[in-house]
Image 1: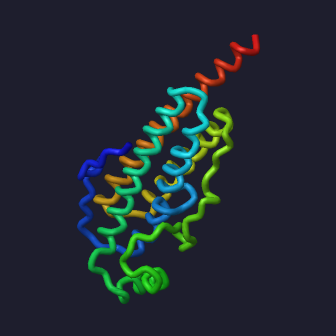
Image 2: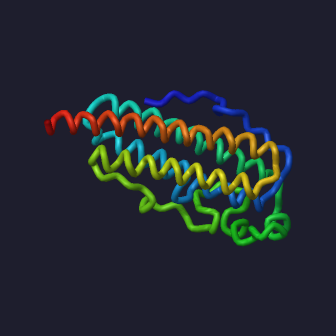
Image 3: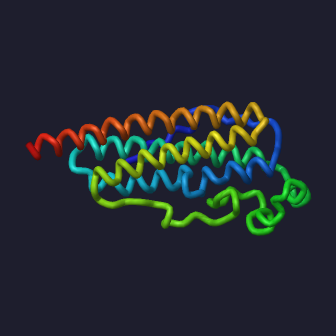
Length: 189
């Protein structure tokens, strides 16, 4: 069960409009290393974790990734709020505007729509957690790339927060992987 709070983990208050930057950040909404992929991956993997500790961690992080999806959607929405076709075209995002106007659509920065092919779920806790460690590092690297391209302090404050959460998730997945590996080693003795 989910409980929705009518606030995001960090306030999103973007003052300047910038459809070009929105198009870049959109990759963390619907791209291969974005928040939608992460949330669906973790919430799917939780069903095959061997114990409640693994199920709980994947549920916790999966639902937090959904909140990050809301944050990214808020950033993109605020960066494009009130912008029209000419503004999108000026920033090189005219093709996006033709298909979606100001809507927040799950796609990567190149415009490729979200696909379930981005998700990995093997049903093996060691394989899935190793995948999750890599996914968190790819998300962190994407946030690093966004920060290199953005000069908007309002955006950067939120992106830095999200980047830090990826690092925490990486650490938590590492702890759970160590737990399962030590259980396997003790069984093999």
